[in-house]
Image 1 (cartoon, one colour):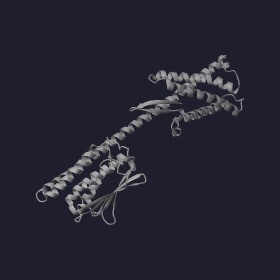
Image 2 (tube, one colour):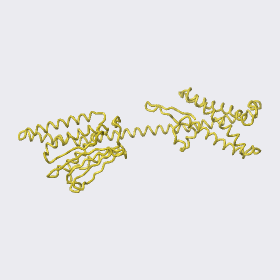
Image 3 (cartoon, helix red, strand yellow):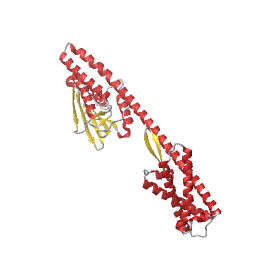
Image 4 (cartoon, one colour):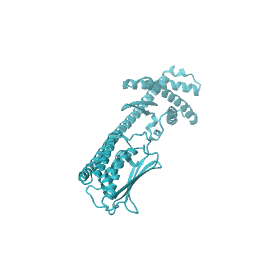
Length: 388
């Protein structure tokens, strides 16, 4: 019957607190004026049925059950809607800064609605003068006792509902904290992944440049230029608040450019990107470990080298990215120190960022080599992937 507002991290949260919401089945529908009015009618009718049964067994046996039920329904709904209106006015005009005062006001409003509702209900159904309840002491005592009992029970029900919503709000806050902690873990794994990728790539590239300066200066210069392009793309990606598919492709392209100079004709690569998807947001550093894995474990150990094809296309509600190589394949893959750690970290990051909506699979190609298939939920170009 009332709508409590709580402050949650700077946002106003509507606390649904109709008595029927103590029953989980009635929490399925979001609160609205029409829903609350319907719930009030259901709640009042349930109480009317219970009161009718009690009256049937403990008194008023002279009236037919249907007539007694109809009279109780009229009076109960009249009181219920009056209480609904009174509590709504209290919520709109009386602040909750003093909870005791607010509870006292609720108690008084419910009691007054009951004192007024019973005489009016009898007047509507039977046609009796509503003032007769106030002219006889016995009727007045019954009326006041009923009003106080009704008010007390309603306050208990409302307080129970508010405790429930506070528990739900606290549980939601804890879930937010857990999610934030999960994002921190994902970010830490990203940094660990970058720490794995960058040092050996940096050292190998610089060592190759040093080795080529005297014998092949033009090739050394070209490798150094491509390495500068890679560092620029990597630095830009690390400073950006979020990543796009285009940015991740530029980083992978710069990485392959450097390795293409070092491996010469042993590494051939191309991108096949569906049109219109380059601005889709994705989490940073998702493609780099896949490309590096294809080079390190597929192409580089193979004497004649091979090809890497990176494909990206929408597939229903998913963004499908394939990094395919014609390298040694899974069964001929030689063991390497730390092998598989990068992909394990990547899978953990995917779980932290996207939950079960994302997946990563390694598929052995029939003609040789491996395809790493990454599937991500498609987000709108304006969507930002949250990263701490």
